[in-house]
Length: 527
Image 1 (cartoon, helix red, strand yellow):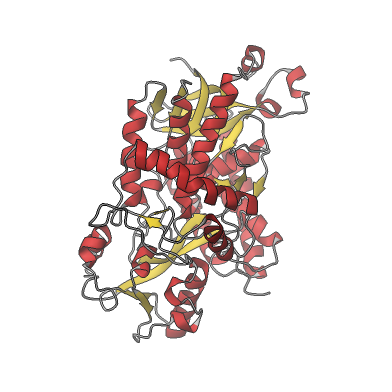
Image 2 (cartoon, rainbow, N blue to C red):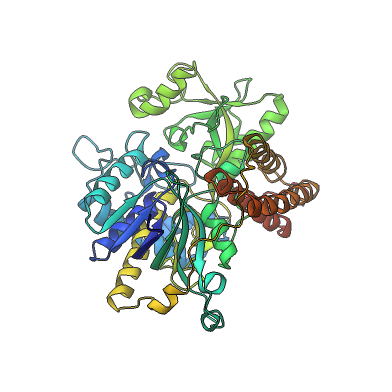
């Protein structure tokens, strides 16, 4: 078994940002290896996206869109990044999704694209496909990725560590160099248990979100902050990682992953009501049910506390005039499976961890603070979202930055900016620290329960100083134990996932403790 794979570009993660980056690089004639931890390329969060993707509405402008994004983000956004998204977004979307891939978004009777409204937007500017927008986007991307001869796809591959000259080179001369360069990654192959060394001129982290470190989340099982944790260990700068967006409306049911009830349902007119039938959002914000997600989420929590119930209702049946089953077929079917006909009765809903507004700090080309390491999609912090993400901007951000990353890498490759062989040869194959077969599934499960409950109860929707201190102490102790266990035990996917998840939770908690200012998704209840 060859333990080393060499490539010009390595993309870790196969959602919208990863696939677009890989395609853009490959279309320039550059060879790319695209890896993901799932069995399929669409095992990430992109395929779950329901509502849509921001485009440009009637009477809309880049300036108006930017204003909406910054308002939702509590003015903690990076204005330059917001302007970049609003200016480039519609152009890139049109070029890739409409012209090149012909993604089947919903159209009017006359053939024009139908644009819908969502919370926080001042114009209908959302392209969508029923309530499975992410699904049709991923279907189109996967076909293009699979057809491209310059892309090598490798599934069921879990990245363990980003390789850097400061941490992994055994050459003293290279380690003395001031600039820290990324040279690839150590990757665990699920089928064999072998850790392979991927050496790359350029590496892209597109590993998705962090929702699985919380008890209730809409995210897929692989969304546990792996790229975030790896970048942190490598020394990359992180930003805004205390800002975790909780989606206000997930279906109230017991499941490892909560089913999202798209914000587009409220965009079409549905209202949140409490158990007494009162439409309460107007009591909290003049925008009522179309207020930004952080405001709606906290309002729901307050209503649940007032009534003593475990949920509130989202009433589409009494407020939407269109054919609900046709407009929201996936949501309608899922609710029916849970015994609720949303066309005839209100849906019981609760908030759930949904989107990571912070992440690995990147510039407009997706470059991190480590040379040759890029990041895009949810694991990256571009500065667009600030303290709270505006609805349907994440898919556009993943598209725009995935494209920018691909363009930048392709340009640098054309300029022959390759890693020299001496540097590559200084990176040793994986050396296993632990060989003991002492991984106990019960202990792994208990550690995950500790992480999820700690984050949900103490670093959740409403945070206080005592809660954050308790979380910090508990996660610090768990991290110490896991570091020792990790060094003694034979490597496995479940162990890598647990290690990354615990590190991510600890880093986020530390950031939340250090920020006393209550803003957006980081809501301090004691300030």
